[in-house]
Image 1 (tube, helix red, strand yellow):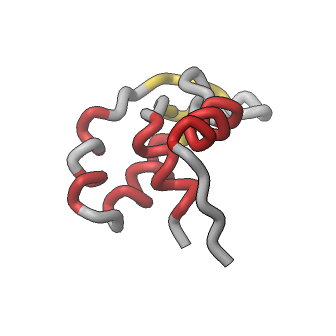
Image 2 (cartoon, rainbow, N blue to C red; image 1 turned 45 degrees about the vertical axis):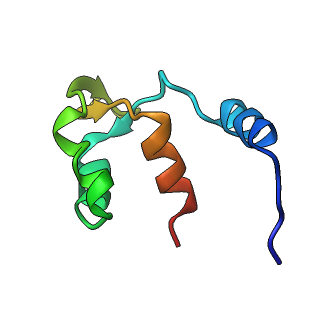
Length: 77
């Protein structure tokens, strides 16, 4: 079943869940985007590299993602 919503409703839903300040593991995001369509692959080089730590204190490289990438990640099957 498909549900049709307006653009305004869509933006409201995205803004409720999308957090532009949230950090994601860069390696995981890059791995997913490498298998994505061309328009998403172009954004790999634009992802920032941010030093972060996990809950156990291990150093990691994280990134922030754009709304464009967030929508792709949430809607892929």
